[in-house]
Amino acid sequence: MIYALTIFLQLTKFRISLFAALSAATGFILAHQGLSKEILPSVMGVFLLAGGACALNQYQEREFDRLMERTRRRPVPSGSLSSSAALKIALALLFTGAMILWFGTNWRALALGVSAVFLYNGIYTPLKRKNAFAVIPGGLIGAIPPVVGWVSEGSPLLRPPILVIAFLFFIWQVPHFWLLLLDSETDYEKAGFPTLTRIFPPVQLRRITFIWIFGTAVTCMLTPLFGIVESKAVHGGLLVAAFWLVRKAFGLLKARNADSSLQLTFKAINSYILWVMVLVVLKSL
Image 1 (tube, rainbow, N blue to C red):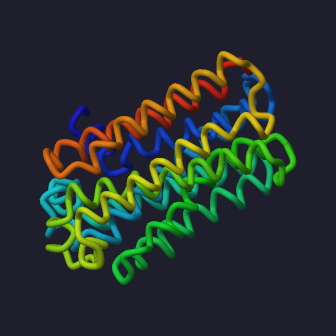
Image 2 (cartoon, one colour; image 1 turned 90 degrees about the vertical axis):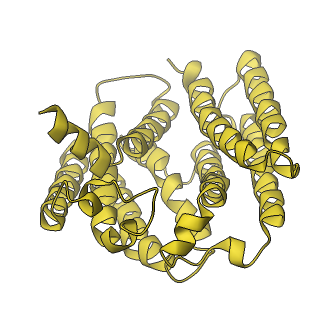
């Protein structure tokens, strides 16, 4: 039972799926200024769609995953799960997630959820095998879950608070991926993926990544201007978090201990976005 659960969590990339669900919860709480039982369909729907999309991605990339040290122990390339079983699980999760959004929320939330799956599995996954800059349009995928939560109970789509939150998630996702790429560039090249390290020297790519991280911090500091929170304490928390992230990212600009700085900055940028989510919903609970 535990072994089967482990395989399932690996196949659905549980942490990524959970993060998508939490970002949907953030959008819902911001829209409704509080928690209610109506949050459950949007959060569960997004979680299952994200898990299904991740499982489908592993089915699509099973041959490439076998070539990479970072991914060869995943359920399908390792032989723990057949590719047909992975596909069936993926489709079942996608169908269930879509039905929960359809019956538990509204057509706009469903359309956004399905569009995220299409962008991830239909566009980003094949595109990243052809173009090293695929992560930039791929960043749109991460911007969608909070919007699903926002519209799930009828809140208007084109409103400044949710648009700036969506942009924050988009701009955060690009350096998040590039840090992973820099740390695993040999793996990606071994599998035949086009990488930015073939276009830019690693030093230059670290500088570009730092600029995107700085842009993420600036975007976060500007969120109070869009009416998301009015608490001075939360404003101060966002400011401190932004300065902390930039300080951590300064290690990317140093040639010494480059590998360790990549890993530390990757952990920092993930911790940062979680802390930001906590802060922006804090006064709504």
